[in-house]
Length: 106
Image (cartoon, rainbow, N blue to C red):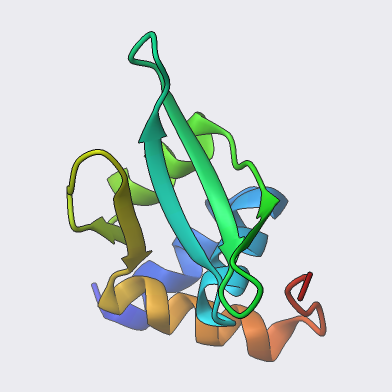
C-alpha cells in the first residue's frame, strides 16, 4: 500500500480535534506531555512565539496519533516534547491544503 493511500485512510479516520492538532503542530505550535503530582499524563499545546498554553489535548487523541505513527516524542523527563513524524508532516501538509483553518496564534 502506498504512503499516500495510508495517509488518505488515516485522514478519514482522524477526528476533527486530531486533525486540528496536526495542523497546529505543523503551524509552529509545540506539544508537551507532563505528569501531574499523582503521575497522570497531561498534554499541553503551546504557542511557540508567546510560549503560552493554547489548548489541552485529550490523552486519547495523543495516543491515537502516536499509534497511527503520526507523532513521535523525545521521551524526556519531566516534560516530553511531541512532534510530527515524517508521515505526520505529510498528512498535516495534506490537511493544510484541504482546509483553510489556521492555528490559534494566541
